[in-house]
Length: 247
Image 1 (tube, helix red, strand yellow):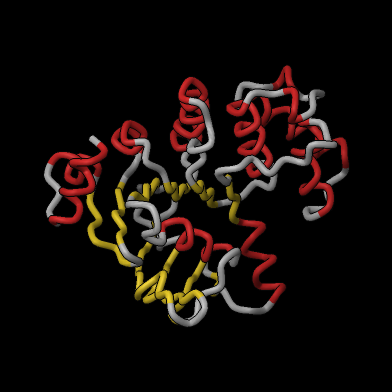
Image 2: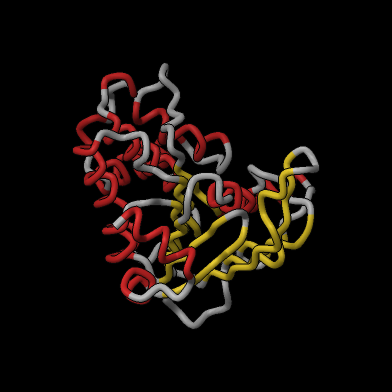
């Protein structure tokens, strides 16, 4: 973790669904450049909704969010600028089934960054090698395993050369034997100094890679601690009950 100014600043973020379900209740969090933050909590606690506000996939009603010095607003140009700096990997892979792996990875850099195809393909091949699936570049998503598809999704997000990577339960849709290959890719990414915010229940990953663990419940942040503190000596009763169920 660096001593630089935070690259993500969320202050008193509030969100309601249908004006009656208060899904985010005054949440504040800062993330430093090169920091890895893991967000954990029970289903329905608001974890995924919270990180989706960072790139305007989810609107929020009150509070403020600043990404790399840019305050998120309803202005479409503002949102587009932030989305170019924030990569996201979802539970489902969301790959285009009619495009090859290489075409999936080069699509956004060509259309959004306006790169020449040759440059986009060169960088895409480097990224596919980095995530360990270079030999799959000419295949279609349907020809790959779930773990391979998720690694394509990671390469696709990295192709935009973002400053921040968000992961929304990236292993939850995978068979157990495929989880390790995706987590290994995420570990490598963390080791390279990428700023990462990960919603996950993968305790081993959180222990090994996270700088901080954020525990959420019922739309609030209950506890923030280092992995050693959180998993060995959680301070809050709600955290203790959650860990008793998953450890």
